[in-house]
Structure formats: C-alpha cells, structure tokens
Length: 424
Ligand code: AMP
Ligand code: GLY
Image (cartoon, rainbow, N blue to C red; front, top):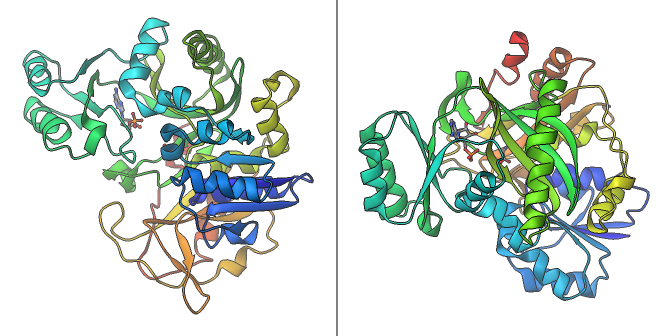
C-alpha cells in the first residue's frame, strides 16, 4: 500500500516509524515531513493546510491511505475534502473534529450527555464575561473557544488576572478568531492523565495512558508548551479509574457524537483530571497527542495500517489492541527560549548513536536539512528522545542517558520528566 502522512512533528515521525513496520506499507510519503521522517518516508513539500494540493497528490500517486496527524487540518475539514474525491483517509470529518475545534461545543456535549467535566459558562460578549467575573470563585480558568496552539487556556488566580484574560482573548484577540467565543470554567485540582483511543464511529478502544509535562521549566514552572516530555503508562491511572472512564466518559462521548449525527472516526485523546470527585474531562483532542504518540506507539503491538483501516471501515471490534508491558519515557529536547523565541538552524550532532539500539528512539519534532545536507534544528521542540525500560524508572534512566547522545547549540530540556513516578 501507498501511505501519505500529513504533518511535520514528532507525532508524525512516530506515526511514520510505526507505519513503516507494517508489511503492507510499500511506500510512505509525508507532507511536509521533516529531516527525521525522511528516513522512512519521501517528504513532499505541500503544507498541511493545502487540502486541494494534498488531495491532488494523493490522486496522482494512487495513495491507498492518508493518515492526518495534526489538529489544524482536521478541524479545517481535510477529511471531507479527501472523502469527496473518494480517497481513503484516517481522521475525523470536520463535523466531528469540532470536538477539539470548539471548547464550547465539547462542553455543551458533555453537559447534555452527563459526561463528567468542570462546571462552565460560555460567552460571546466580553461585557457579559466581565460581569460574570464579579461574583465568580477564584482561581478560575478561561479558554478561548477555538484552536490556539495549545496556548488558549489561562488559569487566573484572581479577578484582576481574569479581567485581563478576558481582554486578551475577546478584545485584543490574542488568539485571533479562536477568541470569538470563550468558556469560563471551574478550576479543578488533581493529577492529569491523557488517554489515547481509536474510534470507528461506534466503538472506542483505548490505547495506553500517558502523563504529559506541559510547562517549560522544571518543577512545572514557566509557560505552557505543547509538551516537554511524558511517560506511558501512568501508574496513577488504575484499573478502577479506567473502568469508570470507559463507562462514564469514553464510550458515552463516542455515543454522544453518533447521536448528534457527527460520528467520530479517528483518534480521540481524552485529557482527564483525576479529581477528588472522580475523573473529569479537561479537554478532548481529535488526534494523537504530541509527544503522547511518541510514548504510546512504540508500545503498540498491532499493525498501524490494520487499526486505521478497521476504524475507517467501522470494524474496530475485530481488532484486539495490544500493548507491551514495557513502559516508555520521552524527553523533549527544545531550543532554548521555547515557547517564546528561539534560534533555528544549528546542526544536530550524534543522531547516529540511536542506530541499531533496540528500545531507544529519536523522533524529530523540528528538524530540517540545510543546504549542505546537514540535519539542523528547525523549531521550538527539536527532538523527542524516547526509551523503553522494564519499568518506568528504568525507562526514565534510559531516556536521560540517550539525551546525552545528541547535541545542538541551545539544547534545552527538563530534567524532571517522570519525577511523579517516584510518588507512585
Ligand atoms: P487544555 O488545553 O484545555 O487541556 O488546557 C491546558 C491545561 O490547562 C491543562 O492541561 C490543565 O493543566 C489546565 N487546565 C485546563 N482546564 C483546567 C481546569 N478546569 N482546571 C484546572 N486546570 C485546567
Ligand atoms: N501534548 C498535548 C497535546 O498534544 O495536545
């Protein structure tokens, strides 16, 4: 089969690596891809938002299956464009990707179908939001309705911060049209867990749990980022919690989408908070997480193509999803200054150290070839250094050992990825 992967981050590298192991994969393309993905796939210089060009490429090259990794094209309707042309594509249609694309939509869905989540109100008028803050309890959480590169959530300690937040989101339009609407939500406390799942429109099968580290600096300090590293599984996601989530969150979400005439096909990433009152949904994503994909896919035993096809065909019940016991840890190597401003173009040294090392992976998040053909840094997040181990502590030690194998100017990473394991 000929496969096209859409995206250019560490998640898409992990997907390409996983697809490449399938005996069914004859040829893999990735648009636009990166220097690491180029090891498994022919990178095609078409942007992820250029739907017509991508579909034309898929037609011309007789692509049998397209896998979309990123949120923006999914929310923008890439799957609908491909389907209209009779092309097979893995991912939710626009009317289902709204689960991630609109926080107001997802909150209303949860309320209507009694799926546990934080209490909230939705606003389209900034003055109404400001009035609401007069009597609200703090801290409180403000969320821009639309996609905002994972940055549209503000946790406000007091009224002053919240008033400023409403101005930023709804008046200054810091996140553009994502701020046309806003959700104001109750602040929850607890441990955060991500659960990735495959969905075929009717049923859901969960992959593995993971714990992200969203803040830029050690000790969960600094700004929110796309994710600085993570581990899978998380020991805090017990069988009992899983049982509750399967019954009260996962399948009910898939049923609710089907009942709304928006059947969801693809990956749902459930962002959960394990509160004192039980697990509650923080957010939904309509795709693999990044870097969650980097710790979950190395543990998956199934053939990626088989699972994607089963989802598209509504036959996920025929798949026995299986995961290795061995846990996995990913440490993101970023460019110093991420997520604000950083330099690019520095040569990356030592990538060859990962060759033929079983259980060690280096997924490229932001890399490119320079005109000398060297692999150079090309983003805020540069590499996801990932390792398996017989237990979480060993996986963590292995990942941090491998962090030393690669180097580039301005290399920056958190030293405490997986610290929570010690509390388990
Ligand atoms: P989201 O993009 O909705 O996952 O939000 C980003 C991050 O903000 C989450 O991973 C949480 O750490 C935090 N967050 C979001 N909503 C809440 C909430 N209601 N209470 C506490 N923290 C939250
Ligand atoms: N790592 C969080 C996300 O992909 O949204």
